[in-house]
Length: 229
Ligand SMILES: *Cc1c(COP(=O)(O)O)cnc(C)c1O
Image (tube, rainbow, N blue to C red; front, side, top):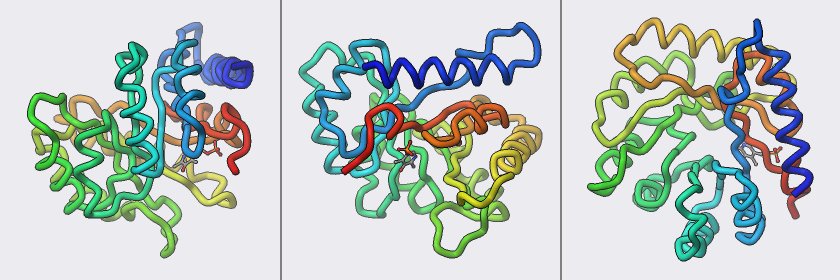
């Protein structure tokens, strides 16, 4: 998969130039391969060369891939992230099949995910999606709603609150830096958040900019897998 190699190289270069000193920042930014609409064979090929984290938006499609790979030894090294909109009646499927969910935006959804996480599975890693542009039409909780949501989520035993996720509007050129400030201020405000370590922002078109402005996870589809149908 040469496109994947190119993306990995670009990401490493972005990490190197974002680093303040000689410190190695390459392992501080996770590449999430967004495999929506792409066949499970492509997921398997990428896992074979070392890609670990995969993101899916459509539940039915995702579960088919997860189940198809369950027979394969590769399944051990794959970490599945749900990055699509969450409908209330779909929380059980997410709680049972994923390691991460990046699109929590309301308390009722968090509560259902916590209640439905099967016993024996590790806590579900959660990112709160923030509507950083304050757009009516967009998913995510508003920045002013964030404290109440954090207060609830942080105490659920079956959820591990890890950070924030955004999908900014194209024209919002300082969304990354505003979100980074928000992310840091929450860290200061809630010292008991043990694993507040993930800021998911940046996609195929803007991953280097996102890394320069503090992203710790870029979600890349097209640049790895090619255009979607
Ligand atoms: C599809 C998708 C991506 C990947 O977008 P590309 O532009 O193809 O890299 C990232 N994040 C979310 C939430 C998506 O739905």
